[in-house]
Amino acid sequence: MRTSTLFAFAISLLIQVGAPLTAVLVARRRGPIRWLPFVYGALTYTVFQLLTWLPLSVYLDVVLGERLMGAYVKGARTDTALGERLTRGLVLRDAAAARFR
Image (cartoon, rainbow, N blue to C red; front, side, top):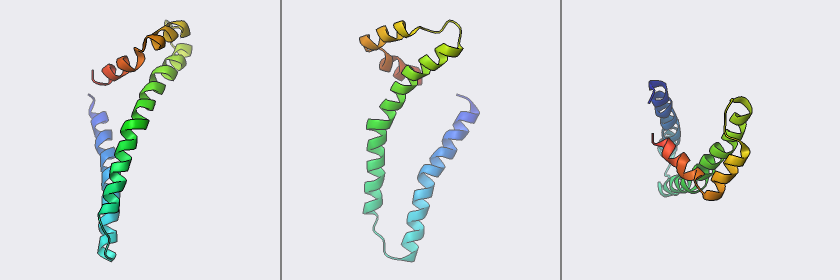
């Protein structure tokens, strides 16, 4: 993995975790605020990311990505080949495997 990718992940994590945590700490300093609503918010965000956005993102990346790249890249798979792979259910498995290579 490239150094720039790791740096981008670190910055993203800092913003996604650090900003809400800072907001909670500032709010707690100004008055009595309970942690429970923030914990519920973090859990809700995590569940929706795992159950909706991640699968949808992988699916759209594979389906639309190949179609868009097919218009620009010589020798890309045709829509017929893509349709055959979709009917066999291999697209999501291939995309998930590619993410961990």
